[in-house]
Amino acid sequence: MSRWKAFATHLLLSVLALGGVLLALVWIWYPPPLFAASGVQQFVSVFVAVDIVIGPLLTLLIFNRKARHLLRFDLTCIALLQLAAFLYGLNIVRETRPVYLVAAEGRISMVTANMLDPSERELAAPAYQQDPWFRTELVAVIEPENPVEFGGRLTHTLNSGYPAQSVPRYYEPYERIAPQLLESAKPAQQLADSGDAASAEVQRFLSKHGRSMDSVVFVPFSAPDRPLCAALDSASGALIGLLDIDPKTALSDQ
Image (cartoon, rainbow, N blue to C red; front, top):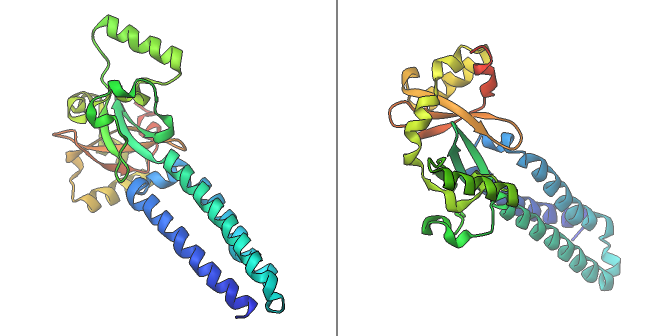
């Protein structure tokens, strides 16, 4: 096998492995436009660059058929280094994957696994004691009317540093907060009227989901890198999807 053939083979195997990870990121956890708004693309770029440099490029540099007694050892070391980098990257993916979309205080926020408060997890409802793996679950955090309970939540936030959206024991089914979201939601037409780019994005979204303008409302959606708009069914409050529009654009003149 020539140096370039070894490089091409190693590169192909690396691309296939990385491709599987990227497909999982986009299809399972970060459907567009969440992928771009979450900031995960910055990590992916580093992940890809490191994995390619440690693997195929090192193979290209050290490959020498005349030194067969050393070549096997060198390739084994490269493979182990690449595997270690790959597993490290997978662990970061595991820790930073979005596990919940939390509706609270008139907006929906993305919460990743490493943003969750690990304390008192056993006090959460059984459905929220274990984080989902192959889906992102939509839940609600409803502000308590009882002053004592409200004070307890505030104290926990101040002491732990975790906001209520990151505490699974406060989670409730999304359906319980949907009516409140609808009260604060704005019509999709307001988004469409905020600019040409926003209008095109709204029309694309409506066409994709087979919706009419008056059947959709929106609330702000908080993502780590930039805000989006969450589109809701105007009758039920069910989450339809996300629009790549900054909600401040539509609300700035209101």
